[in-house]
Image (cartoon, rainbow, N blue to C red; front, side, top):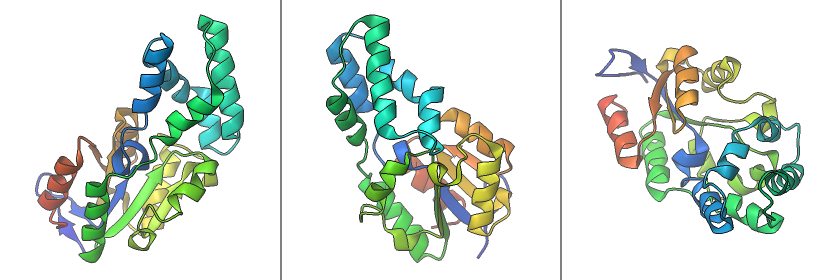
Length: 212
């Protein structure tokens, strides 16, 4: 089944969503609040999560617990503030809440015969969470998890692999991500990429593409 993208003239066969921050709530809100509570810059932990140490977690080369130990020691060494490792873990887990309106969109697309997928930079420890029933797994043609394949966004190869697993030409995959760097990486790799704004905008783009 092929639909026309009214804005670009491209044909869209599938929709792929990022998980954290798109299918889920903002994954950084709780850790920003915790940083503020500790009296350090609000993006202290966010900066760490965007650094090379967490990248190793997302490719399956480092455990989440090892990363949490690093994060606590790093903050204490740099700014002299003690970080509670259990509290930090809880803050990361707080981002593991699905947006009901996005789950509804996924199900609406799938019921309409549209191929739907997920492409996520994630820790291998998170697999037990997203396979626990929080996602309608039956609605997805493919779920590409960075920690399972040893590649992470915005590496071009992971976008190409995602298109292959969806069984589509890259240009016919509509991809939503809340990180500008990943949107650019997807577009450079040939996907039809959109920056995620909110669930309403996401649904509207799908409607404009003839998918709903």
